[in-house]
Amino acid sequence: MHVTFYTKPGCHICDNAELMMKLVQEDFPLTWTEVDIDTDDKSHEKYMFMIPVIEKNGDVMLYGSIGYADIIDLF
Image 1 (tube, rainbow, N blue to C red):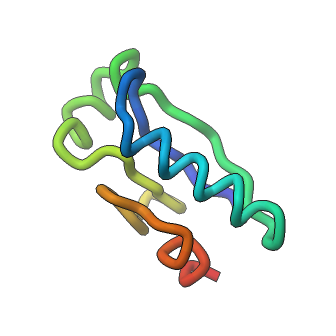
Image 2: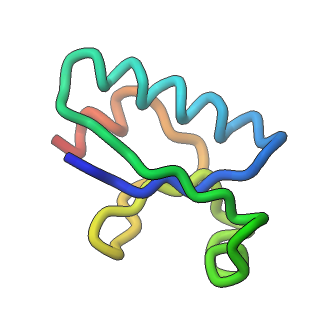
Image 3: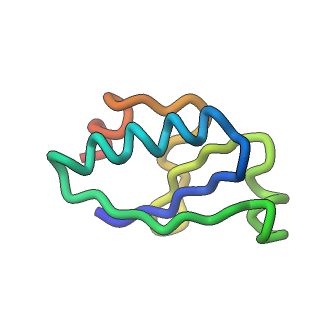
């Protein structure tokens, strides 16, 4: 499964979510494209109060505090 991961530098919950995604990736076919909302005005306006955000095909799947089990549930 390929998702888009919205994040920004210095976001500790984003760092944790990415770590959880890397752990999931060890057992599941998970890949992502990372988007820094600070460099993309449209994404910044849309997600500035929600990051981190995992989106698939334009739909928000998860946001905020994202744990390992939350990501596993996407499969």
